Amino acid sequence: MTTPVYILGGYQTDFARNWRKEELNLREIMGEAVEGALEATGLEAHDIDTAHVGNFAGELYAKQGQMGGFFAEIDPDFGGLPTSRHEAACASGSISILMAAAELEAGRYETALVLGVEQMKTVSPVEGGDFLGTAGWYELEAAGVELPFPKLFGRLGDVYEQRYGLDSAHLTRLAELNYANAQRNPKAQTRAWLGDLAELQGGKYAAPITGRLTLRDCSQITDGAVSLVLASESAASEWAERRGVDLEDVPRIEGWGHRTAALTFDSKISQAAGDPYILPHTRRAIVDAFERAGLEEVWELDAIETHDCFTTSHYMAIDHFGLTEPGRCFEAIEDGVIDFEGKLPMNPSGGLIGGGHPVGATGVRQTLDAYRQVTGTAGDYQVPEARRVATLNIGGSGTTSVSLVIGRGG
Image 1 (spheres, rainbow, N blue to C red):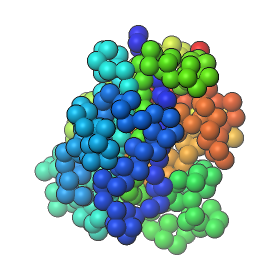
Image 2: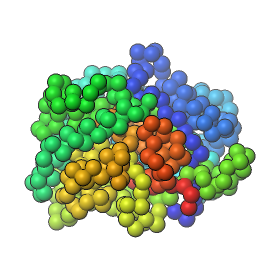
Image 3: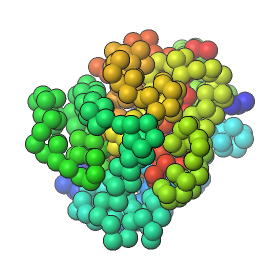
């Protein structure tokens, strides 16, 4: 990235909340996230030049579109603010970050507020599963199919098994890690769900969902809003000077990758024939982010926040990030490499399985958690001395892949 884009701070709602039960509407919850970001950064509404909303399916879950218009409802000083909304299924949040960053890099604006938001606890699991099916090719992959996305990501595990072998015990271990990490995170959806991790071995958590996937293998949808304030180098420099902070200590987006594959899962797998990586476009997005950040290998990172919508996507991320050779993901699991206290922790926040998955907010949440890690403000889930963290946010069955590298201190 030739023109640096800095992250000044942000805010996350509690992912365990149910907004409908609290009788809150989207304006109110978006307002909480916006006001939280302004308070965290010491800025006012008039300091923001542009705003970007990441949202997947507001028209379906909340019967609401045109979300940029809520900014002027939240604060009259946002009146006239240029806003836009971005959709890429579960990668909607990361796309909104990329679009905001592009405007800053182009010199159009100096500051941008990014808001990822989704209200999902409005319908039954069956109806919600049908809505999620629109993240694939609905007519071919989801129409009339119960819980289509667990089936699609179950098939990701099937492909691993066919090519390289796959032991479901390794998937269970990934679930355990994410639930355990979530217990340290005060905003995680599942932080109070378990008295003991042994509960994951039986009962409802071991209930079959589809194929090899059980309930513990699946992230849970929820309500959530997450905000970030991004700034150009000049705006960040002025902000840092006012706060008595060295600009080098302000986190920045060091690298990014964004790739799009075919919409259907079958097309992806067919087009990946002969490639050692099961989702080569995802691998390329990660490599692009590394190259732009000047990283030669994954071990230059201190932590990873990855898209574990299911344990199979978490498993895939291990070799796609380069922690192991393709198909050898189990080695990093067995050796404790990705444990919270391991050589390269994955999802110290609890990820999607432990932290919750409000679809449009997930990519922004991952980036905010990366920011927290590199600023040493992650609290009980802080990775010691973290200075560089990568994210991976996936939309659809691997259709849209976005990876970011967030770092500070040169």
